[in-house]
Amino acid sequence: MTGRATIAILGGTGDLGSALARRWAAAGYRIVLGSRAKEKAEAAAKALSADITSASVTGEDNLAAARTADIVVIAVPYANQEVILNEIKPVVSGKIIVDAVVPLVPPKVSVVQLPPDGSAAQGAQRLLGDGARVVSAFHNVAAAKLLAGGTIDCDVLVCGDDKAARDSVIELANAAGTRGIDGGALANSVAAEALTSVLIGINRRYKVNGAGIRITGIPTAQPQ
Image 1: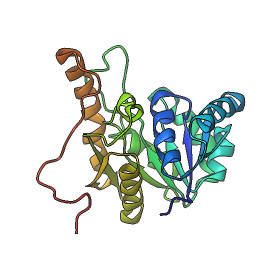
Image 2: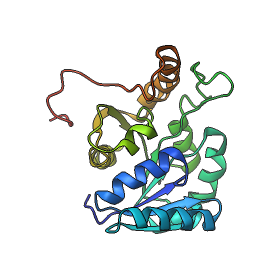
Image 3: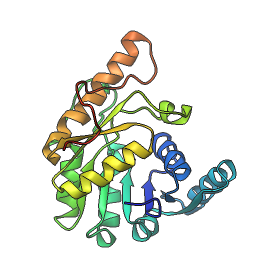
Image 4: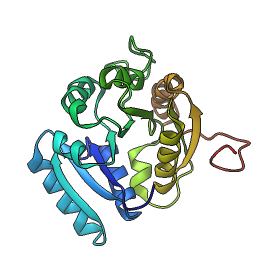
């Protein structure tokens, strides 16, 4: 993967999506912000381009953004995931789909409540079919930390059944200032998604903003 790759971020006007867009735009990736309303995405893209003058950022509706990109990031609420995946399914065969969706069920968002598929990422793979290369990542890094700038003291667990796709997303995690860790098969995304609810509870109990995770004992970001 090079900095010339085009990344579509569906949910790109939300907290996590816009924070990742800012990081990757600054790192030289071409960014397409996706939203249900193209006008909203275009306005967000214009604002980001004004802040990072070297960036290549555009805005589209979700389907057009997914069609344009090499990599598609899903950063939307769990309640919207299925509708968006069904919408983009015709245009994402062969592409890497980075699923950052957490199956939070209000009002008890600090309690782990996993879906029937096992995880949101496994549900995405089922909906999109074998043609899409679904990778689970970016569940345990807070948008506020991404927006703060600099290197983030947080690891990102990257899970997927396609190792080459995992490696590409690990590279994206590193480019975002976090450290990507190969978490193995897509089924392991259950752990990362469940941790989000645990971290929400930790944030509340310890009165902190953006508790994250760190995997110890690893000298490098990727296994040899």
